[in-house]
Image (tube, rainbow, N blue to C red; front, side, top):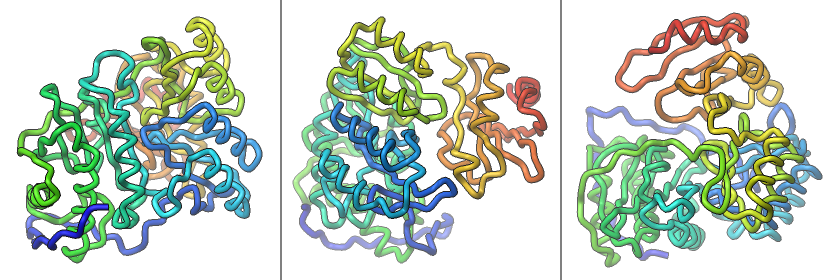
Length: 428
């Protein structure tokens, strides 16, 4: 745990509009179940998306014994179990703890860490971020202060290729070609260059400084970008605290990130498969576990990377494709995402997953990503340019473009089978 530091003076700026949460963070976890229309929901945090084969089997067994049998991938590489009996919390916690998936009950909702899923596998990254991942998770679980982080607070560990650096994490550590690491806060602004060996510790310093800033500024916020502070003030405070704990650093400009994941297919000694709409049946999960040699890596793009295989690549690809997973990099499924929709969510106006699947045949493999939502909250929507397909009051959908630097264009869609025509009317 880091030593307590003097409280800096955080002053708000009148030009910014602060976000202040007027309720507690109700983000679900593995120990705090959420009541949904299809039963209770548990969200299991899996830092970096990394699971051993044994842990994966435990999760599959839990889904079949206690839930609806399916495993649901989130946009942060975590897993959700749905359709749970509300009274199964103790049994579920016992299963997860025995598998090593609950190293700290007090920190289980704050272990939100995404990491470059192909790190160390394809030779494209600057370094393998696995040591960072292990060190950061251990540091988080050892920090009493970190227990106060929101379940929505996100860390990103990027191996230099820029994939998870574009996900808008609260704290991003990106490997640099000079052997160091660049520490960034929120979605914009400068970064602090630190030594690679100090990257995990620096990330925790940044998170704890955010908590102190939120407390002393008098606002209740969950994310870095919600803080009402002048540009650079939080980064300056992080820099002062790094100096105080003996971490050398230099200020510099941020590199841009892409926020795009690996394509399906063979990768080095392993492979990547895409999961349509992020929902894995019990059979699909068993097939993934069967062909994996030692571990699975869940990605923030609803995919699964198997670093090494227990069968030949050809057999693995064939088995996964036969199970309904996407192994073709030209599949239109790579463009399509959706919230849970009906019947799982009471706020949803439509069964968006069924409509998205029904309209798949009208899509070309290339084009803007589409995200189907049952209401205007757009839960789980991706970052970056896309088309939002939102269920409308009274039936049908409203399509709108979300393109950086451009005004949105909108149109209506009464029949999902006519999706291609609607898209042609609004996309460049």
